[in-house]
Image (cartoon, rainbow, N blue to C red; front, side, top):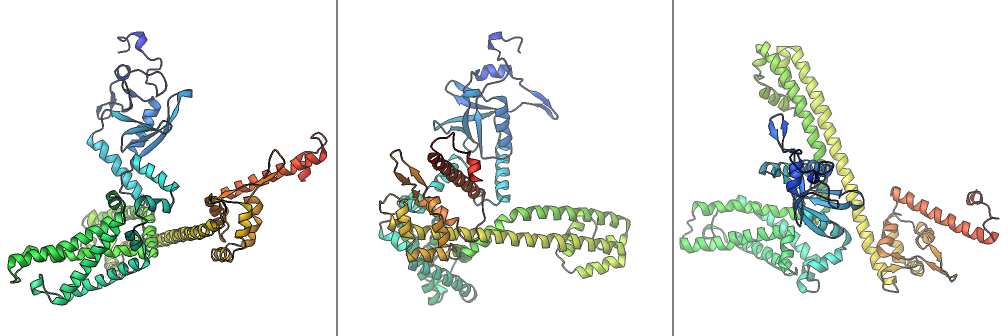
Length: 565
């Protein structure tokens, strides 16, 4: 092919250039590339990635294309890379869910594609791998497809305060919003959930009726009260949103709305239809009586208790985070059981007494060993039977008990306890910082004389005299004397050109972050060491400047290191 092409159309290195450099069109580059390579199972084409140009699709540079293919096959949702050569190279973001290339500088998107084209199998496998890896890593939304909008929303959420989110989502000035945020509203909903769960127990055990015609009136009254309350609750919460899209994006609201619609259909629509069709005779069809089982779905409303009791969320997050350790432990346990299962199967082939105990195949051997030796279900009976057959068989079973149950399962329990403890401490730390943030902001807004969201040195001194501020510091184990000694660090002096002195100002977020670092029990981080070095360097420069001014000239003044010593 290269011999048939004119010399002017052949690229000097035989491959397509990246964006920003001189590039050949797709058809010319395709002519320069080998169309197929011999693989172990026949002829396979080397995968190459292309980006969309106004004149058509063009190839990435070979190394860039290989990197994109590697990350795509590994199940990555996004790839940050530098595309192009030399000074023309620019940062790019590749989103595989959208199949686009994003330029963070010009904010433009261009389509990308793969050659050969992606088949259904090539699309499904990387996504399954990505979801599985996210599940093993304990990510919160492991089932969600992470496209460009997902990453941008995550970045936006990190810069938006809860007040701004509420302002953009809810009608903060409406009576519906204030009613849904009132503590009585939440307390009443939690109480109704508890009572409704208790009522389901009574209804399942003592109510034999299927329709209103053969159901006692207390159960009819309770069904209508619960349905009416949960319907009104959903209506009040729905009217507090600005747009319908905000309702559908709130997972808790969609969940409660689904349960409320199910209760309305079951309690009112179906029962009214049965009474109208049966004419009050109380004869229910088998399909209608089967709707009674749908009442069990009301138990799903108990999941709202996670919002009422944060400790339950901590336990669930700990279990999710420990899923990775659980998965690898189960893998190791399976391998150990497989080895012993194969061993017992081989021994059973040579000894009919062992084969008579049920070790007739590898699967059967693994099942019996897992039940008896790992889960210790009636292990004594199995050990006596193995001991009657041969002492070696009983010894092997005891070795498996020691490895699988006494070592691995107890180790797994310890790992899960440690992970749950770490997650609990992290959640408690986040809760303390959130509470400290809210308390400090209320006080800072009072002492902000200029109303510009910044704290000055004079305002800080006034804040230090507030008793409520002292109580807040003491509640979060922060020493007020330590905070007072940090005054010169927070409000560093700067000398203007006219000789006057001005002091640094801190934003509310910066001040809250610095105060939270002074909590008792906090560990020193790299950021603290860097700030200490920066402060020491600034003070050394200030001392050197004053010393040189006193000496009159830089030549007659000793070096800064000697002055410090």
